[in-house]
Image 1 (cartoon, rainbow, N blue to C red):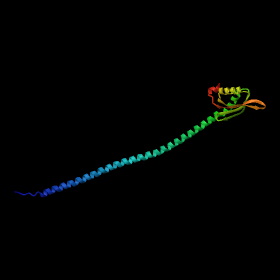
Image 2: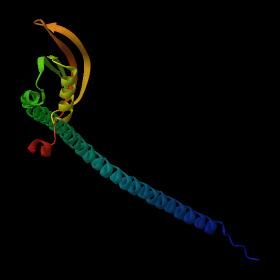
Image 3: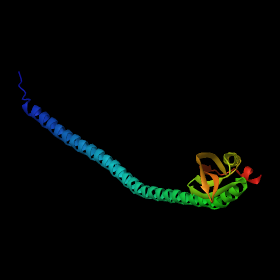
Image 4: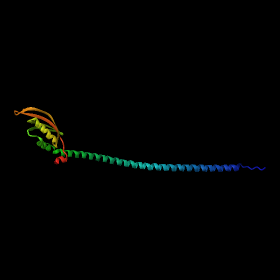
Length: 187
């Protein structure tokens, strides 16, 4: 029988397999490193792009906040101007009120009623005066109720007094002013 020594042949195959394994291990590790590097690069690119977007949004938010503050300031100024306008319009409307009130009093006070004082506090008017009879005070109250500038007359007090050796009635009443509509003023 012939003996063949296969040990060197097996040894060469082992060396070849080891070399193939080492080469494949190096290639797999290089390929894995390359994949990890590419993944890291791609993710880092996404992160830097998102950071740039975030920075842009932060800058735009600051600009919008400034614009919102400006809008708020302008709205406050507009509200202040509207308030001033309303005050001026109110003053313009009240400017002729005293003239209308005195003119209306001249029209509505019946004969035999003498006004001692007229005081106005806001919309409330206080009338003090003398009359020859209680019926004339009633006529004054009816006239004031029918007036377009005065409403809700209320008699506070009426008493008999002597003025210049004459017996008269002293009265005190209140009423409120009103602003008639444009149609009532034209009548």
